[in-house]
Amino acid sequence: MALLVALLAAGMALAQESSKPKVPGLDKIIGAAQHQAFSGTVQSLDAKHNILNVNAVEGGVTETFLVKKTTHVFTNAGDRIKLSDLAPGANIIVYFELRADHRNVTKIEILTRESKKQAPPS
Image (cartoon, rainbow, N blue to C red; front, side):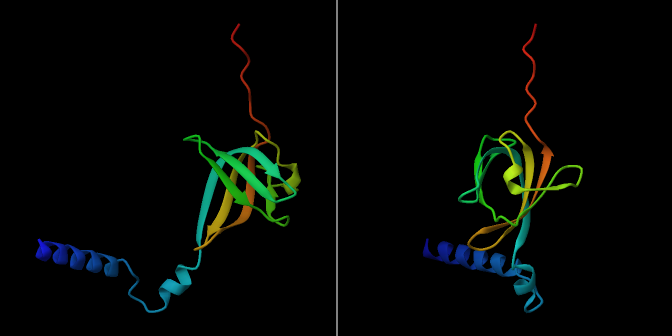
């Protein structure tokens, strides 16, 4: 049994080593930040504390992002607007850099300004 555990541990160590870059120092360059995006609907914006809550498009999960007053916010036409102009119900994409200990929001793009409500069936 101990031999089996030792073999499994050795195999896992080799698998982890093979995923590392072969060029020395390359992991420091490419591993600094990962660029990611999150799409959803604005649930709320706390301008005083710079907190943006976004409901996911799928799955019903709410994500919280810390934003700066200098975060670039654009409409789907490419016009720049103020962060305070984000309204609940707006469909957005939040672009951010994922670092080891936090997310740094770099840009927010508004796809639609308000949620479209369907008329009740007649």
